[in-house]
Length: 158
Image (cartoon, rainbow, N blue to C red; front, side):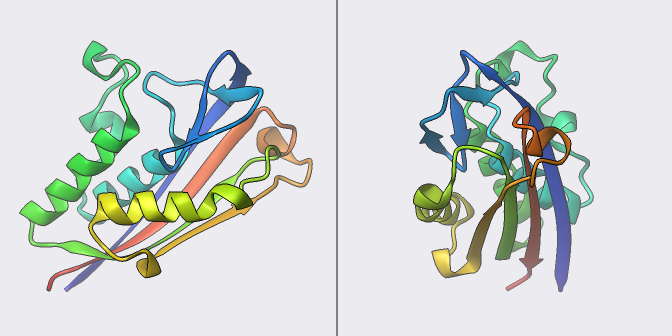
C-alpha cells in the first residue's frame, strides 16, 4: 500500500536570524523568522508525511503556542513524523522537494540537504530530490521577503 503526502511552508526573511534550510546553515544577511529554527524545508517535509498519514499538520503536533518548541531544531519535528509513519507500518519511498528563495543561491548546499534528509528519513540519498528556484521577482519570494518550500512524499508499506 502507498500513501502520498504534500507539504508546504513559507517564512518571512529578516535580519538578525539564521537561515537554516534542510538542516544546513546557509550564509546570508537574512534569516527565516519563526518560533522554531524556521527550517522551511524540514517543515514542508514534516507536513507531507503527516498529510500522507492523514494526521493533520505540523501546527497540530508542534504548536507555536507551546514554549517547548521555542527555537527547537526542526529535525525533531521531522524525526517524530517519521516515527509516526513507522508506527503505522510505513517507510519513506521517496521525497521530491523544491525551495523557493531569491538569494542566496542554494546550489552549493543541495547535496548536504539531501544527505541530511536521507539520514533523518532513513533512506538512501538517491530517493531524495531537493531543487531550488528563484521567484523571478514575483511575490514575497521573488521580492526577497520570504523563503518557501514544497514537498511531496511517497510512503510505502514494505
